[in-house]
Image (cartoon, rainbow, N blue to C red; front, side):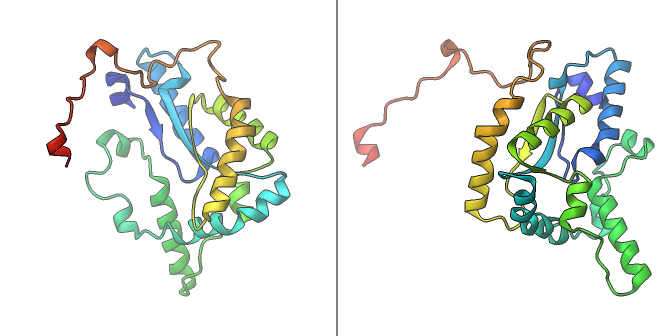
Length: 222
């Protein structure tokens, strides 16, 4: 957090486990910004959230059940010894007793295996995944409402939406992306723009500073 404040960089939280698990970390980030005299411009922060959009909540639960359960049941198998290798976290992070979400799941899985002796998996059913906020599922209006709530509660101006995950097919990914772009994004775009300016969004280089490509000689092209 301190480094982001010192360098005036965006803090981008790449979370696999959703807004409920990430809220405490984001609250601590903003407490740190206040302590260091930085403003609470939401565009200082970014947060990754899985999303599944359909015509209704019921349809979304059915459509995204397999890819969500595949991702959380199969794609996060990390040995606890490798989830937080030496040098991966800063001294300040360790002092604050922060733990990566991947490491937490790895430890939970290892403890479950140890107790059962059978390798019993952690519950990663679609009901659990949706209830815990790992993936936001619903109709366009429901998803937009939840994302507005997430953005406001976390004070995050850069929402990074993951719309393809697990073993999701190309057709379903296209469907999810199109519904989000056409029916969700217009409802949440510019949520903070009345009060804050996004100083961190990439800006085109001035034309006078751009290099002009040299012409390619015909013989070289051939």
